Image 1: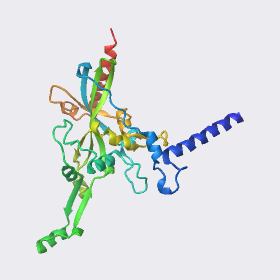
Image 2: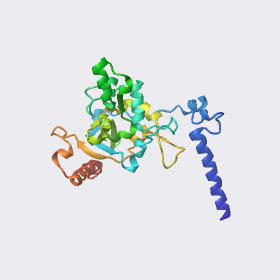
Image 3: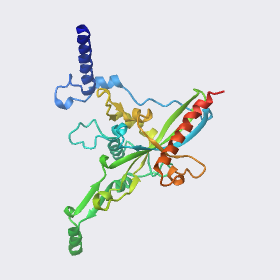
Image 4: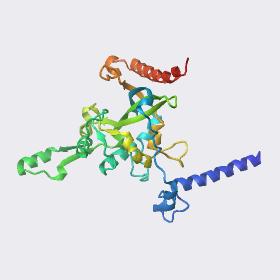
Length: 300
């Protein structure tokens, strides 16, 4: 029994040392600033990228369906997409999904940004900033403008949406049957952050409920960016997973709110009104219908 305990402790210490080295580069860091920064040899050894999608010919798609889903960030399983929202006391390597996307849109790494989930109309950086920032002039500023024709910066209030303001994510995906492999597959096409407009932060007493889709991202074009950004892995902090891996493997909880249909892709709430329970059951019915497609294919 004592030998077993010693063995377990030894293995635990070994795994801990390997974890710290892998996660933070503590053992090789000469200064605190080098912690978490990979050396050139480590980068050359990694040489990794997002797992490429296999080529799927249109003739190999036996059946398909598009679905739109809501990822509620109040659910615990979805916290890796939401946190951290306060980045003042945390390392630069950890950011929320919203911060990662907005940063890379601003620096030009993400170019394919759209108005809606059909990806027909692109949005520019100026369009996005208009949605994320609200500027307001105080009463003193208005008085100064009426008297002098100018407004000092101190009389202008600016409110910016941040990661803490995002309440949910909406995603569009594509389910299909690959007749070559004979199984059901899923391909994520786009995602969008949903939050109240920035104006609601300027007037919190008005209790505005103005949730909007801030922008839509074409997911396949952002995989390289999301692969470099790491999400928190609560089961093993030495092995963070990329946002690309998290989203592609569907490691989140989502509810279907729309599917493609012959009625203009109407949402569930449009034909089931004021009944949240029945809307949830309808979402589960659509999920079950999709799962049964693969099962029925193998039944004779």
